[in-house]
Length: 145
Image 1: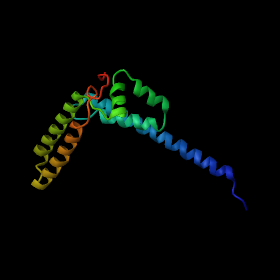
Image 2 (image 1 turned 135 degrees about the vertical axis):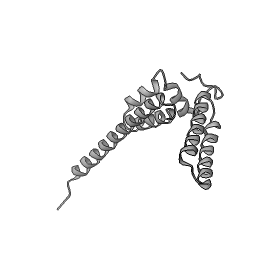
Image 3 (image 1 turned 180 degrees about the horizontal axis):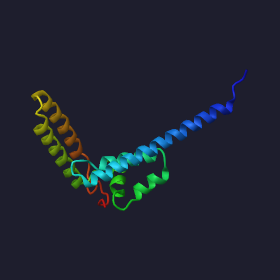
Image 4 (image 1 turned 90 degrees about the vertical axis):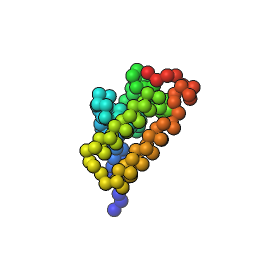
């Protein structure tokens, strides 16, 4: 008894289509979170837009191109892709959000000292990483929109 070679091809195509659909859905979830973050000061925006562009890049070249060409956030996404650059204002906002998040954590959770230090170290490491990324102007790039 021989196996049908077309059955394997159909299974791979269905898996590929499911994977693409999953990345499209994930991209829209990240995009929605980024839009929400634009209006809520305690929620990040840029990282969700970067993740949305990444997801669309694996599923829909049309949606990826739309995000990269967008007049409001396309420049920031292109700068990040090309140079890992983060605008100075975004760095300030991110570090301010990290500080505010730690203050809310400290005041509302009343953590034990070891946990407070662990969370502070993780947040400080994140802030240091953000601050050490190049800025678009320093990288010789056009200013973000």
